[in-house]
Image (cartoon, rainbow, N blue to C red; front, side, top):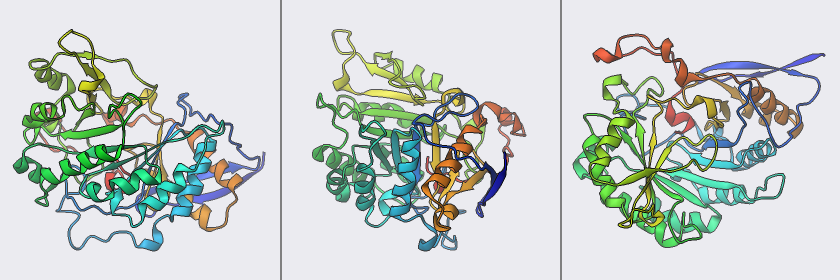
Length: 391
């Protein structure tokens, strides 16, 4: 079979070239990798900018006044994002999540949401369209997001204490303003299910031992009874700038030991294959799981890798396709778009990239050097930053 080479360069991190066979790789609605993992979820970073400086993502020491963000012309346009999204959906993607940076900083983001909400799957079913935000602009934008077609939303909130939260976001931003945004999202119906619960309104807390782990129970107390999902994420070794050490990780099993001392919870069945969170429901006074009370989820990406079921791809702000949050290489789809590649060629590129995927980054941390248990800083292979491809 003859070959043609389409170079897919990533100037911000190391890049790969993809050899495409002459014969097109057509979309069948189900695309699997070498480990039989389907492509189900596409996370799209719409900006590399953020108004927070969280230490685990965009520490001030790196992302300071001199940091050079991508110029606007380098970002994928809304039309380019919508076009790529449709091609991914043709391959079997059923869920689109907008991320950043902080996605609500992208001007006219509701225009993009409306374009994505109009996309249908091959069997004409609607997409699951959601967005992750730090909540700082949510109060102002909740109604327009809902009107544009956003169905669900995830808000990052790392503490209930103002003092601790300001340490985490490192820009002196108050908890009350994020809570006001969450309340406004409830008022406009973002994340409300058929039963009237807000199961599609999720709160994510990154837990860093010794910094904000004392906030776990106050967070649960605050959101208990509101029908939401509160998820605790182990502090991860993402990128190369957040100073990750194993001693800063609170393992999920230790977190659950704290929770069980105050709350009566029971493990819930997974809602779908590839789900990242181990979910727990609260029992009511009758000893029954009550969805109205909400639920908690544990994302144990350090201590319990879930590579085996990972079905997520990530599209960076400037159109690089990454196959893992811990990846160091990306594939430049923007160059195909701007060199007037046909939908068929781009569909083939996506198909060949995913079908050749064999990574299991979290399961192969043997490449991490040093003695993390002794509290020493670790040295990792150069990885793309989370602010560039979204969490």
